[in-house]
Amino acid sequence: MNIEQTFFTTLRFNFLYVDYYEFKKTWVFPESYIPYSMLRYVVKGRGIFIIDGQKYEVRENQICYIPEGCRLECYAVGDELDFISIRFTTTVKINDNDLLTDFYHLKKLIDDPDQSILQRFTEVYRYAKGDSIARLFHIRGNLELIIAWVVEQTNSGNLTNMADDEPSVASLADLKWDSSIEASRRRANSSNRIKRDARIEMVVDYLIANPSTPFDTKLLCEMTELSGSSLRRLFKEHTGKTPFEFMKELRMVTAARKLLATNKRVSTIAYELGYNDQNYFTRVFKSVFGISPDQYRKEARK
Image (cartoon, rainbow, N blue to C red; front, side, top):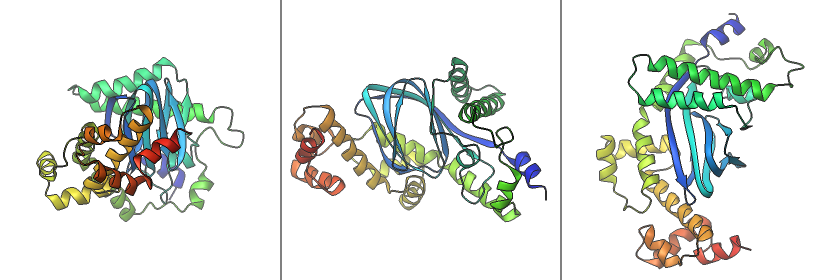
C-alpha cells in the first residue's frame, strides 16, 4: 500500500456543529472531555481556555484550536466573551495522535487572522443555520480553507526540514498507520456516535444556560427522548461526567467566579444558584474545591 497516497486521499474533515456564543463575565465551562476538535474565533472580549491543564489567555481576533480527546475548561474575563465555535472530526486517525497537532504542528493559539478568515467562520455559521441546497458544500469548503490558513500561519518560516507543510511518508510509516477495514469501521462508528451526541450537546447547552434551575432528570429525558440510563451513559461518554455531576460542578465553578467577580454575600450566591440552605451549599462547594466559599474568596484575593 502507498501510505502517502492513501493518507491524502482518505483525509477529510467532518463538520459536526457551529454556533455563535455570547457570554458575560460570570460564564464558566467546567472541565470536561472533548470528543471532537474545535476551532474558535474570538470575536469580542477576553477569556481563559485551559486545555489539558495548559492555560491560554484568549482575546479578540484570535483563533484557538482545541484538539479532539483533550480536557477543556473555560471562563470569561472582563465583561463579555463572544466567539464562533466550529466542531469537527477527521476521517484519518494514526494511533490516537492528533493529526493537526502532531503532523501539521498546529498551535493552540493563532494571533490576528485577517478579516477573510472571520468571514469564513461567519459563512460556516450562516450556511449551517440556513436551508440552501448547497449548504454542506459551502460549510466543508470554508472549514477546509480555515484549516489550510491556520496550518500555513503556524508553519510559516519553520519548514526548513519539511516538504511544504505535509507530514513525511517516513513519519507516517514509523507510526504504523492502522488502515485496515476494521480500523475504518471503528473510526466510522466513533464519528457516528459523536454526531448522535447532538442530543447531549442540547442538554449541555441547557445546563450551562440554566445553572440555578433545579436539576430535573425527567425534563432532560423528555428533551432528548432518551431513557434515564441512556442519557447518563451517553452524557458520560460525551463529557466524562454524569448530568448531575456536571451540573454540580457547573454550579460550584459559577459560584467560584461570583465569589471573585462580585462582593455578594455567600448566602446570596447560594440562593442565586438554587441552594436555599447555605450550610449545604458550603458543604458541596468544599467537596469540589477543598475549602469553604469564604476561604476561597479570601485566598484568591490575596
